Length: 339
Ligand code: DAH
Image (cartoon, rainbow, N blue to C red; front, top):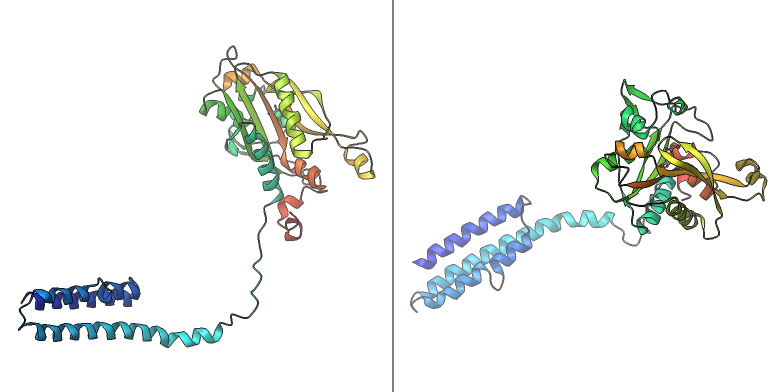
C-alpha cells in the first residue's frame, strides 16, 4: 500500500522536475541524478521493496520497473531534443579557423601617470581622497585664503555655473574638504579634474588634471616638504633627476615655492620648452597657511602642514615628449594606442 503511494509521489515529482528543465529553470543532468542516480529516488523505492512481504514483491517490482523505464525514456527524449539542434550549430563552427583578434583597450596616459604618482605616494604612507568638481566660491577660493579682491580670482578665469557655484579651478579645494572630513594627522593625495576658462591651444586647455597633496601633523617642516618632493621627482623621472626650489607665491601656503627639474639644453626642443634655461617647473608647494588650517577646522597652534599641487598633462607631456595638450582629450586611437 505504502509503496504504491510512494511510486505515484515520485512520478508526480519527476513530472514537475521535467517541466522545470523544459522551461530552462533546472538542469537535465541534475534531474537524472536526482531520480536515476545511485542514491536517487528510484533507487530509494527499489531499496524499500525489502520491507514488503515476499508475495507482494513481484507486482511491486513490475510497477517500479515501469516507472524507471518511463523516467529513462523521458530523459532520453530531453537529450534527443538537444541533439536535434546540435548539427546546425556544428556546421557553422570550424574550430580549426584562426581566431578573430580581439582589440585590446589601453589605459589613457593621464590615467597611467596618475597611477604612477599615486603609487609613489602610497609607498610613502599617503592615502587617496576625492573631492567635488562642482564647487562653491568658499572652497575654491575663500577658505584657501584668497581675499575677495585677490587678483588670483581673475587670473584663474573661472567657469561659473550659478552665482555661487563654479567648476573648480584647482584641486586645492579638496584640502579643505579633507581637513573637514578626516581627523589629523593626514597624509593624502587628491587627484582630479579641474577647469579654467582659457582658450584651447597646444599649451593650454579648458579642462585638465591635477594631483594635490596635503600633509598635516604636529611638526611638519619645510625640510620634510623638500625631501618628499625631491624623492618624488626622482621616483617619477629617474634617480639622476636634478631639482631646484624657487620662492613663489600662493595665497594658501606660506612660505611658497615652485619646484623645477633640470631638463637639459642639448637639443633645439630642449631650448624651446625650457625657454633657454634648461629648467622646467613641475609643481607648486609650500607650508599650509595658518588661515587655511583654521578654515579646515584645525588649530594652527597645534597643527602644521605642507601642500603641493601639479598638473598631470604637463607631467605626462614631459615624460613622454608629447607636444600638444589637445591629444589628451580627442580620443584618437592612433595616439592612445601608443601607451
Ligand atoms: N593650486 C595651484 C594651482 O592650481 C597649485 C598648488 C600650488 C597647489 C601650491 C598646492 C600648493 O597645494 O601648495 O596652480
